[in-house]
Image 1 (spheres, rainbow, N blue to C red):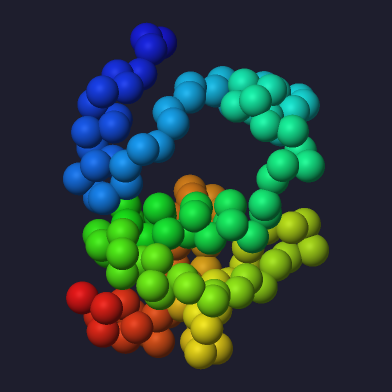
Image 2 (image 1 turned 90 degrees about the horizontal axis):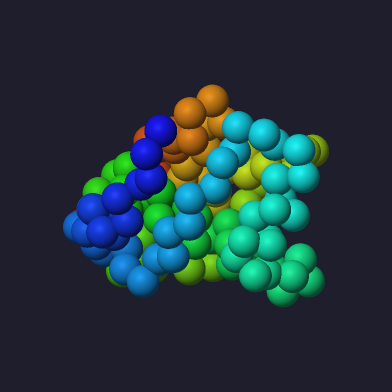
Length: 126
């Protein structure tokens, strides 16, 4: 398999308002010690991580790409949002600052399931 085309990837991400993203190819076929390998490649010490900010940023990026929501609107929607977590530490639900259940990440393929109330919030943001 060839190397990814970083310029094309960045160009495609910019179409969704996602700019200044570091693109680092990581082979995830071998999950043994994956987190430590990723942290090593990124030059991040585990203590430096801000899990809440990381979760929020990941959801914002997915909202932009999967739902074609403007980055500013996605950021506003996620301002003050909280997460319902599973026992394994994965996000089960995303709740906005008003207590509305917006979305639920789908583990199987990485998508997001939008609730009816979430659709109303997103539609109001457009």
